[in-house]
Image 1: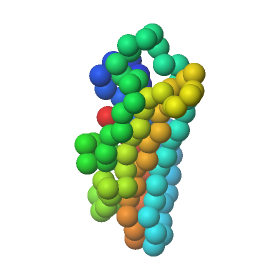
Image 2: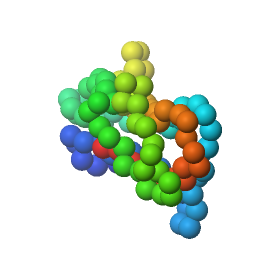
Image 3: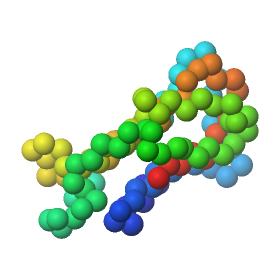
Image 4: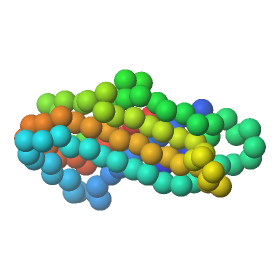
Length: 113
């Protein structure tokens, strides 16, 4: 889900269906990315002025099995929102990265604000 209801905060959440988890296992990094075009809203709508938010400004909250040892890489994580150059819509693009090795982590939900 992408919650744009609060005009000064953006919440992004990914969740597996109830009773399920997404397993990640391997020697390399893992990235969760989301990109979408959304209506910009009325002129002056402050939430959609172009903004780049570094991963050091947020920490993802992870629920699941065997997720305590995940190594969040803030330098490779980000949120970018705002109007594309020459676009009629605004864009939301985000990435959260965890560095490997990752040993049998199982996500039921991950979110960041």
